[in-house]
Image 1 (spheres, one colour):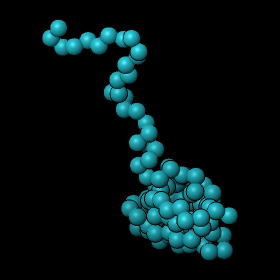
Image 2: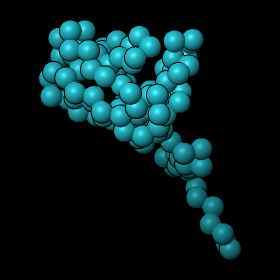
Image 3: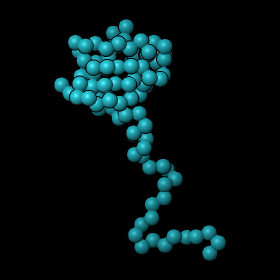
Image 4: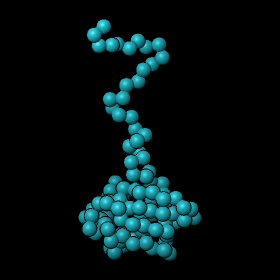
Length: 105
């Protein structure tokens, strides 16, 4: 399975640097996934940093038994990538044939 995690290192409050079996490497922010009673302890950055690799399951686990499926981790966007593809709300779009108003004219 390409999405097996072979290396995991805490990198920031709620992010992990992950390496997958197929060689893919990326940093992912898990904060949006930390919902539900088992994930409450992981909201504490010190506890989150206690992440371990379960080499049998091929994913990340924490001492309280919390884990995240490796395919979920593989499908997460790399940190910063999702925001880079979104347009700014101030991004202007010029339609073909549209006239551009210029200040002072």
